[in-house]
Length: 401
Image 1 (tube, helix red, strand yellow):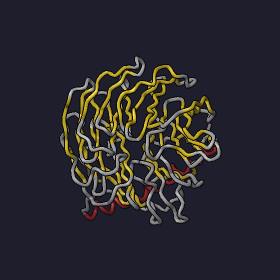
Image 2: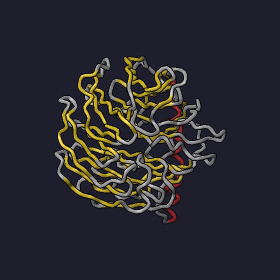
Image 3: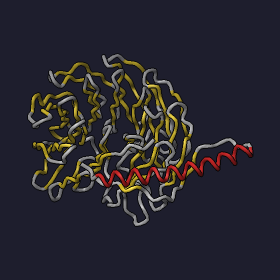
Image 4: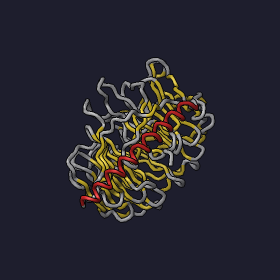
């Protein structure tokens, strides 16, 4: 567990800064109202000292470990455990590792081969692997016992392709391949429920995003949606300039968000209609969203920008340094009213920061730098950060009041 003093320090610093800021805001608003000005979106470059944010535990991997996170979804977080894939000199084909979130202790590990994606589903672990030559790779799905890593079903071949992505809902597992295949699976039965073929260009990236009502196959410049039963719902060409990197897309609260160099677009995931676009021209590198808070947060080279999910208007802007861009491998993760990412600091090193989603002002910071700044994972309590050969797990504090 995280040290009680760490949580106390975080909360007391946050509360102290909030009281001072409320007084300043009250004075500023009094002046503005008296002068007839309309309050605009907040622009912040806070100089307040960030609250100390330390990991509850750190898991050290084997020497020479390489995480497979940059090009695939080779990590997943559940309510009680973390699952990830690591490659080391002792295991060049990779191993799947499960670690308890409360303790940081290894629960199990098992050999893997050419992992494309991994996910936690109910009490199981779903493993997506590939086999064969580069010209004829088969995509296979296996179901593992989440408590000990035993293979319960599979591997079952579901399609072919060099790249694959996976999305999970309460009722199904969806697999997309770069050959335009979208497969709905019941991994407990080890059977394909339905499959659809969509237009594709060989070698392109692909992404699958799913909710309980619909599933979206996303390729460069194109989004195609199906119902949970496999019925074609809609097809939409994405607005120019917002169909960039595949990680710059999320499905949240009934909308599909997709971003690129020119801005961000919001699409109704049920009808395919474009709800709004915000083409501000600031190349987006990170994207995170929260339906419960009604906002999305995007990261650019030196700013963090919060937009309303309802209409795309800007809520606040936070300057996050001018020494270099945030790590492009990690997206913004929103947990307990905090938005987390890795800005580059003046010493040219990435460090983990959290910014309050209400206004971008309150701040958490882990002083220990990261060598790379790899993808972040979270549930409603824990935040997990990967470094080159270590995993750090944080208990995220709630913002007082």
